[in-house]
Image 1 (spheres, rainbow, N blue to C red):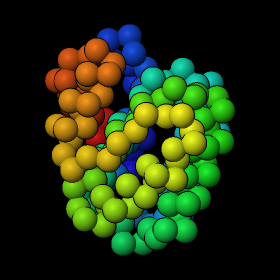
Image 2 (cartoon, rainbow, N blue to C red):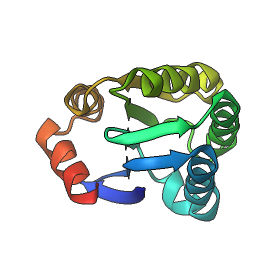
Image 3 (cartoon, rainbow, N blue to C red):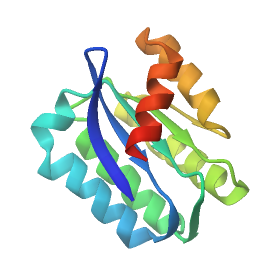
Image 4 (tube, one colour):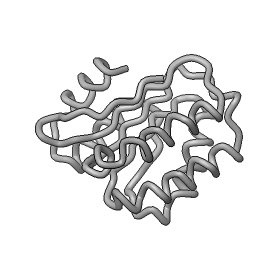
Amino acid sequence: MAIEIVDIAGIRGVLQAVRGEHSGDELLAENRAMFFQRTDDFAACRFWFADFSGSDLHGVNPVHIRELGEIAERAATSNPALLTALVTPEDLQFALGRMWVMLTEATGWEHQAFRTRAEAADWLAERLQLPREALLEAHAREG
């Protein structure tokens, strides 16, 4: 699992690429590290582009998603205006992603779960006024 802070055309954001088999505990640890060990870096980010294509999340359950939602709520105190796009092509991933979106509505973040990376990039590009290709290229390099 790769999670990095990048700069695209002067706009800072988080790129996360989740590949292969992952447990809920691994996702929790990665998110805690990003939000609570890199607080200053995270606070300056405008977006979070998380791609779960090619991942097996069968080790993730609703309890983990609730905990991820709690982490996001705490993280929102340092970054209340984040845009988050989740790429969740498989049915289980999409259901878990939608659950996370609903559980994190109180963060104030604008977020959405998508089936394809292109849809997520289009949504982020429109809101950030960035070229879609720049987001896709950066994600391809980091992922």
